[in-house]
Length: 503
Image (cartoon, rainbow, N blue to C red; front, side, top):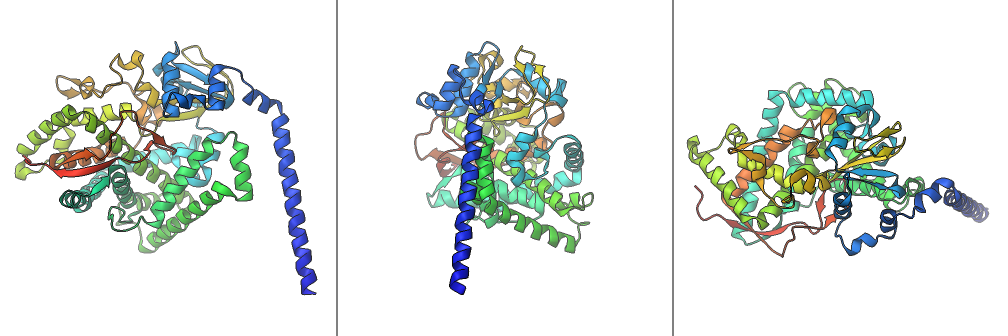
């Protein structure tokens, strides 16, 4: 009897699988035969052909470099990738139009929200309208608070003094090779976890393995980014439906993030939030939905970890190729410390280091942590350069390409030259629509000032005491790995040396 029951169950399973497989085959056949599919994949223009066949890889290391080449060749600084239904621009007038003048016509859009929905949920970087405005106002108010800023900088300073500096001293003494990208990712993750959750994962202890939370966060970020690279949304959606391949890995990673986030939120509710200054505690005063809290905090963690580590890696990569810039930075740092009481430079003095600030901005011009950002047009429109975009079109401004446009930055646009940001020794910003590293208009980054101070604190502390030597020959045009933010393939391995004379 039991044998017959087992046979019946197996037969049912095989029958179900056959039915599902047939339905999947029919669905793919219908998609393939549809007018939309033929329009998407049968464009005969040279750009679309190069994209579909990947022939661009013979001349360019990265997709971003190929886009830069195309945008520099375009008279308007705008191109169309028809097979992706994507209009890409490096024209500052178009960027201002999207982010400010006609802001309401260019939201993130449902296609983008679907790609990151499982990971970021209803967090600030994945929503539009009232939800986005609510979170932005809440975050802006908290981050502008002197109490919160002091709390955040205390955490950064503590992480630098108690973990980063001892790590570099140890590596120098033992002639140990370090991957700076990995070090900065660990450092930034420790900082943002303390600032966001009030939790210390201890990732900068290199003798310890990365925490489960950090590992799951990395996997979720990378696999979510790969969704965007799928030939069509139906590919990853079907994988998610059947819970196979990378979609199964993504689900497992997000489950780990959810479990840990839920545990931290539950514990914080038990302990109370009135005496804590981390973002979670401060947001709890206004939000009672635990899932919503999780989404908001995870979004801020993504912004506060990956962008910081990417920007710092790009900065030190450029210094390896430009020792004269490093010397100028050191001159400013040494002068500030020499005139400071007790040999310590305060945050106010770091804020007044104009050359350091200019060098950081210049490095992010060439290596922006977020290379591009996309919106979806909700109504037929014409961009200022004359490009027509139809409803539902993805419109992308490409910050990486914009930093390399001669029309925008001049014939020396490929050079690392912090002096372009200085006037009589003082830093002078440019329009955020010419330099959209922190976005612009209504969506300008709310954590911009905190991020800049964190990065400058790291830069000043490291360059005052240490030198780095490249382990292998590095290129001014590195290879990037897939991800939501710019990640340098192979990292940035260096040998650490203590400076002989620290003034």
